[in-house]
Image 1 (cartoon, helix red, strand yellow):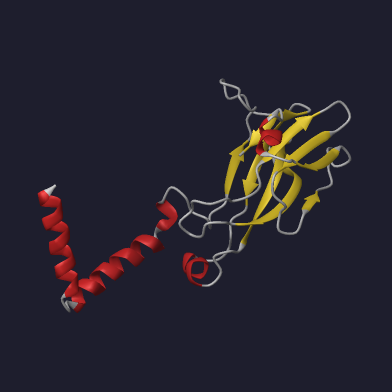
Image 2 (image 1 turned 45 degrees about the vertical axis):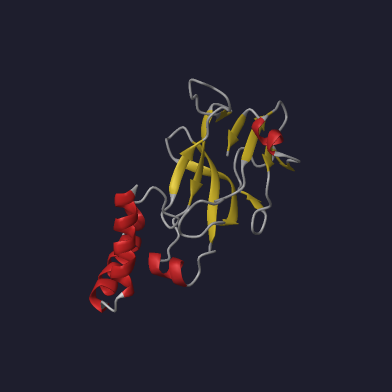
Length: 181
């Protein structure tokens, strides 16, 4: 413990001095790390595709609608890291609920936009949690937070069956057959 206190106090004393080159080097190192954040665990600018699994299934079976696997895709934000960090941290992410067609291509079921809550560092909500229940005559999509400008139901084989329902609590979402938190 004594070694740690000495090391920390020495570092504080070092940076209290007017050593401009050390401060510049530290700043450049920090900004370089941030600018190459694409290798980090979370990058809010790059798009990703998330398979949706059956909730509570220990075998991790992917959810299907009428035998077609479903995914959640977050579009790539076209801004650079620097733009996102300094200018518009709260740019909305565009999300697509998709299914995989027989030819292997993914097609949109619905689209929505959601503002990243938590900034560049991650640690925040990227979009509403959704639950999906396929019923005999409808596909109920339960969500917990309103998207930026609502949901857009895309034309396709599921468009006339989709029912959007705001859940009263998180339990409503995780009680669905498929859930993405």
